[in-house]
Every structure is written in structure tokens, then in C-alpha cells.
Image (cartoon, rainbow, N blue to C red; front, side, top):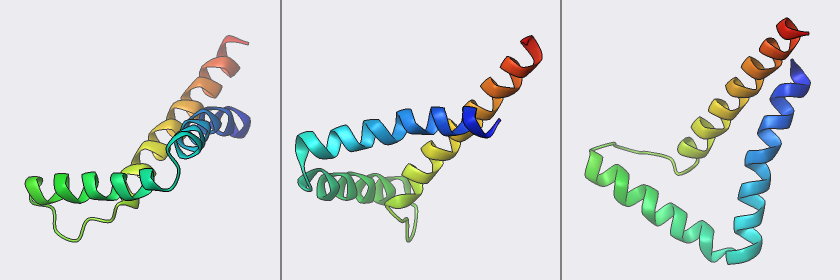
Length: 75
């Protein structure tokens, strides 16, 4: 199960790495500004820009675990 989770997480990590390579560190500043603007409009107080990334990473982690369990059951 650990391998399945890591494999799915790597797809997410590669997406982030590719975005950083293409856009550079300006993408980080842009991301923070977009997250802060969205949090302000939705009424979230003290929202960390890292929280959405962690939520998506957790979702990928969960999907990897589910895929590993299904693969183990199927054989």
C-alpha cells in the first residue's frame, strides 16, 4: 500500500515541479496571491497558502492507498 500511495503522490509532485520549472519562483508569488484573494472572498481568516497544497496532496495520498487496496484485492 505504501508504494501505491507514493506512486500517486509522485504524479502530484511532478506537476508542481514542472510548474516551477516553467514559471519559476514568480509562480509561487502568484499562487499565494490567488489563495489569499480566494480566502478573503470566502471569508476564511488566517488561511495558510500551504493548506490547499496539503489538502490536494492528502487527496492524492488517499487515492493511491485506495488503488493499492483494490490492486491487492484483485490480485
